[in-house]
Amino acid sequence: MSASKAEVLAGLRAERELLNVIPTKRLFTDDPKRMDVFSRDACGLHVDFSKHRLRRSTLDLLLSWEDACGVGALRDKMFAGAEINESEDRAVLHTALRDQAQSPLSPGHARVMNEVMTVRANMRAFVTRLEAGQFAPSHAPIETVIHVGIGGSELGPKLLVDALPPRQNAPVTRFLANLDGTEYERAIAGADPRSTLVIAASKSFTTWETKANVEKLWAWLKAGGIDNPGAHIVALTAKPELAAKLGVPGEQIFPLWDWVGGRYSLWSAIGLPFAVHAGWDAFCELLQGAREMDEHFLTADAEHNLPILLGLIGAWYIHFHGAETQAVFAYDHRLAKLPSFLQQLDMESNGKGITKAGDPVEGSTGPIIWGGEGTLVQHAVMQLMHQSPRLVPADFIIARDPRHDHIDHHQGLIANCLAQSAALMNGRSLEETIALYPELAERPEIAAQRTYPGNKPSSTIVLDAFTPHHIGALLALYEHKVLVQSALWEINAFDQWGVELGKLAANDVHAALVSKGEATDFDRSTNALIAKLRRS
Ligand code: F6P
Image (cartoon, rainbow, N blue to C red):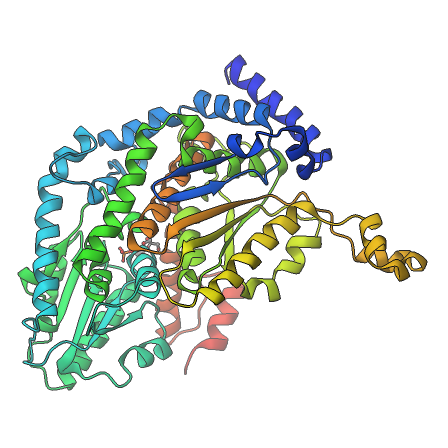
């Protein structure tokens, strides 16, 4: 560690000690310009960072930290198409998927723009044919779409289909991810095979869950009187040869590439179910919003760069305050699936314990992401947020213009969203509690239980309007935040070796479970559980 970086880290530790005892609300009185220093606008998003345990000097030190860690250099290498995913020898170019051919953001994008545009054009042609009722393999217009995929091949499209309105006469989209008979039954319930499109989404086309579900649906189509089930299937994959082997016609295979990580793939062909659901224009708007965020990330100076600021603030709590988790509360029913999406994005990317140099990381890395929908969370988890000694930084998300007609309801949501973050920061002292409830003066033990410590940090992210454009910008913001934090911890955000061991073990356990003999290959606990769960 260079001396200057060591000094920066020491400076940040000193800031932490100080800010742990200064109530955050006092920082507003100390600095009348606080709102200018700690709020930013970009890409249709307003981000208020002012309720954090930060003052100007903290921000300066955090910016020196990111500078010393080479955040900008890693970002530039990513956009340039360098192989920053070293453990898999791959470039990381998901940003090219939302770029424009006429004016690519980087030479790295320019290199892959032709293939990106070809697949985009093919997707568009397919969506247009389907909309016009011309994609009708059994001479019936498509009424049901069953999207089969898991992890990055499901969470993004599922979030979007849930968040954004269907185009006129859009088919109903169902999602089938798990190796779970109940989920399968629900996915096919009431669907007519002749008017069903199956989307098989799998970058590797070898994922157990997806293969098993596609095979089952193949048989279901066949049993429904369809001689050539492949005609009802489109495949979204980086292994087109495997999809072709299954029997999917070539023109129904939409490729993606090694340089698109699964959890960064919703902008690729993996986004097809969203384009089918919301229409091609909505898909393009989504890409455009993300592209704006890419350009902002690439060009804005660190002080004004939303992903850099969000990344630094998150890391401030993890690295210096020992925070374990990060909450995400979207005050919008349409973003109910955002925490699950961000869980994979962040935890599969930065849930690492070894640096790129092969050393154990210092302290901890990416946060445990959790969250929920406001106001529902207020009736479930906010007790802990307000009174537990745990430190849980939170992101509150709300749209200014919800793009629906129930403005009365929306005002209520805004009020609750702002009230929660304010109450978390301001808290309520013993004196304030007794002033409000004088009868508690005689019962100090009860009064104490009705106090709120405050100083609970949060960011508020305001979308100008709830549109595909703003959702694109929001998701890209979180993607880039993950990259920023990976640079601070010197880890590779783009591989996921941690999921491999469990997958290998599952194959072995399955073989033992379906075999006749007694299981002896595992630890005694697992052997005994296999014996208990085996169907004789
Ligand atoms: O198990 C984790 C994972 O490898 C994710 O990274 C990925 O998004 C998911 O599985 C699905 O993989 P695929 O798209 O290859 O089916």
